[in-house]
Amino acid sequence: MKTETIIRTILLVVALVNQALTASGKNPLPFADETIYELLTILFTVGASVWAWWKNNSVTKEAVAADEFMRELKKQNKQG
Image (cartoon, rainbow, N blue to C red):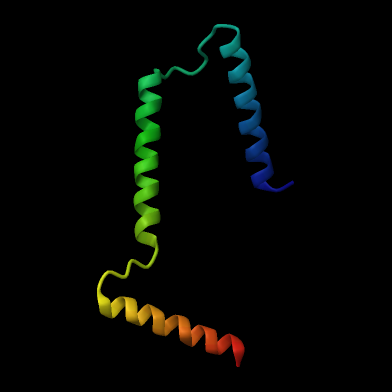
């Protein structure tokens, strides 16, 4: 069995147990809603920042022209 499969299975079991306990009126996780909201907001901000700067961000006219030149070279290499 792959490690990813084991991790997904464990997370599914934890989520199902958490849901069952929450449905029965118990709060199994010792976090306030506010703490979870803050954590998700931080994760979203970090993720969006990394994603935005991971891509090639051509701002200047020269950089845009270089990107176009690169696309043309790649296109020629695929054809020839």
